[in-house]
Length: 232
Image: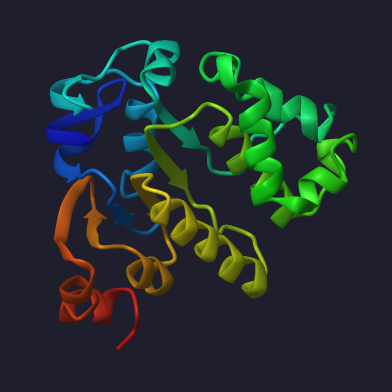
């Protein structure tokens, strides 16, 4: 579904991604892991059309990734952004409907039913202002909004950030559910341990490059990762 080859980009004259190559296959969950400042956010900004590609290539669903963010969404590559980015002064239902602004309108009612079935708490509070929700509920809303666009491929950027341990467990259970439904997911996270438990493959970014990659089990057992990220 997604093939990134030798990607270089950055800000101004500062190069941040220095030859990143990775791929996500159909129906896979692939984790892209690393601490703050290694290039994860920059990668997502390129994949959303906010930053241009300096060199290299990105192929999505067999075609070059569109340059315009609206065209990227229309093609079916949908992101759940870090920090949720909901509209706090709009209701839950209004936030969800905005998810179908560019894609998913023909099946608006069915998609809304699917989101409410997936997140019953959102149905119970559908007219409540989104800004009054808890952090976990806002994350549910952000994911629900992305599902309204009928994603062919979903990028989840730090979905566990700022959540309680119980909500983190719920979040990863949901990722398993979406994966079981056939949705390919790129999971961009700092939560190394749980991400590797739920992903099939993983890439570890360091200083704008892929430092470690492979199936989740081999990456989790890599001595460099265990020492650097797990303190073992």
